[in-house]
Image (cartoon, rainbow, N blue to C red; front, top):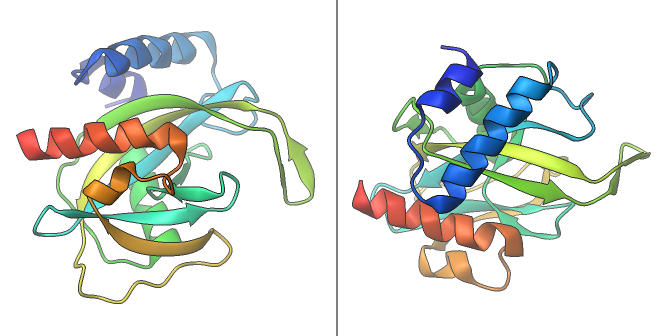
Length: 184
């Protein structure tokens, strides 16, 4: 199934996702290069909501550019299979052996990325069209993070997912992910 078909068949969880789904589809319909960073207006990313078996903790990494904690993920870089991108990003950023709990999209959101320096070059502000997948990992295994990807990694309780140390833009996304997981 193509990315466009996956987005079309995705059932939004709330009003934010309804509006973002419209935006995702409009973006796909307007541009051919939505999966690459060559599109400087925005591009697709794939992320992971990684929970423990008890469903009371989640993994967060300390994002270098946003200078705050958030869930792991990364750029599609031309790959249309966003689930495989999310799995690859989790491996690169956390080293965790994960279990994919559902091959379908778990959540979506779009958000701004501030202008920043990457590899010595300026990257203008743009949008990330983020597709999230639900995954599980063992919270008893020591965490190791990739210093090229982030400045830390940890398990946090679901209560901590709303704390001030979490990237401001993803706090409501964390809240939605947790609520959706509990209702599942």
